Image (cartoon, rainbow, N blue to C red):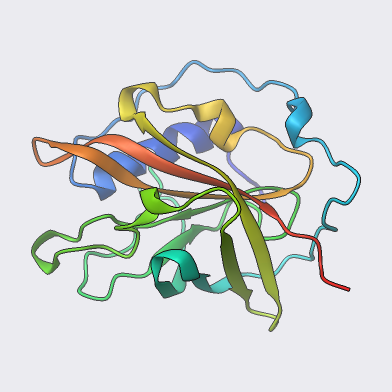
Length: 203
């Protein structure tokens, strides 16, 4: 599979957040360049072994009551990342040009915080997650990738941390992304980003 360049991926993904949350399109290039893997992202003793490629089909986040199917998202005709549909039972969406959960690299899953007239979205409580809580991605091959939350950040969309979210990492990681903060016009001012790392398998 030919993946989009890291810059194109980051720009398209950031644009999708704004479009998906009802805000204006943001298709401009961020101008950021790839950097080497930060020390905290390099494999360490006790790190989990990477899993083989298998598409996620369900996502569970027990601490905030999320149990949702996962659809696949690609790129729209304008080059932005597709977003899940605005429906009453909105699913989360995995960006299929990112690693699958458990592969080395940042696997990216998007979800809505609100879904128009339907009310709350699947990621409405994402900002409540705390370090150490679990995220379980069920995979198409019948296995599960279990992640541990390492950080939760709410940032202004104008200052979206592109490199921290989409940059190369040397271990399996997960990014969950939605909108947050106060509303601004038809959208939201901020983005909520959950960073998580694959948990080692039990004995």
